Length: 324
Picture 1 (cartoon, rainbow, N blue to C red):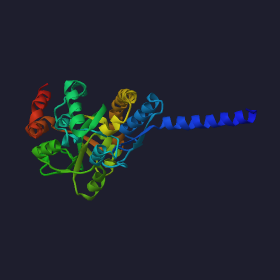
Picture 2 (cartoon, one colour):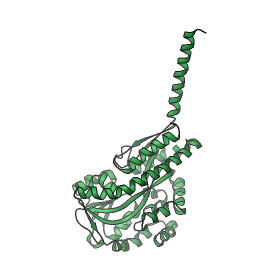
Picture 3 (cartoon, rainbow, N blue to C red):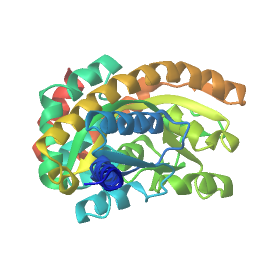
Picture 4 (cartoon, rainbow, N blue to C red):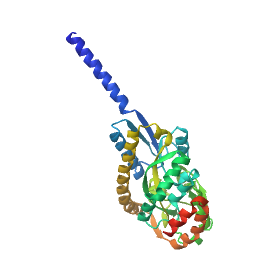
């Protein structure tokens, strides 16, 4: 074989090797959609997960991130994951529409501290919740993130339940939230996150309740200058993958994604703890006032309604969490 033929053969082999390498590098592409914007720590955590997943699978799994509901609203994404048209999302209590025990992620006034919540989320109760989500929703939690406490925003101070008096309040499509706020005295209205800003602006609703991170990323401080510190829900939320997408992965890549989730959780927790203090300072700088409320009065009004709204089969677990 002549030198020229050898050179051409070597070049051809190199091209084939590169093509083969490219094919391996993008063997699986997962689309991860979520509702927060690019400044939110959920988005930063999602980007971290994508980075870790790519590294740990040596490029076999690529995760593409779609913030701002650009891949769909939360419920639409869950439905899409079940149908095979979406792969991943960040979701939590909304899963109770399929798996009743997911209501335990965000029981109003049930978790007394971040440590108490961690104990439940990472313990036996958390394992039971994850198993039911996999079984009934066809969605697999990979890890969980802590959420800042939910607070009630408005254009005025609201320090006791009596001051609500039919207050038109946006809530996510979570039955237990609706029941709790009805018992407290508000008029809760389920609504997609993307519709909240305009609805506040035009007066369709009078307020909303969310963690401070979403209050900021949604720009609600532009139309609501009072945050009433009800702190009515401490909760966690899952980074999830559809069972359809999960089952397409090799065992090695499944293990890699679980490890990526573990690393992402540690990364997100650092961001979360720093972010909560920074959020208050940032929002105060934007003219937002924080108001202390009678939390005991809110909690007393909500408790029976919360327990009554929990599915009967998980009510003993809910009562145990309340009494812990």
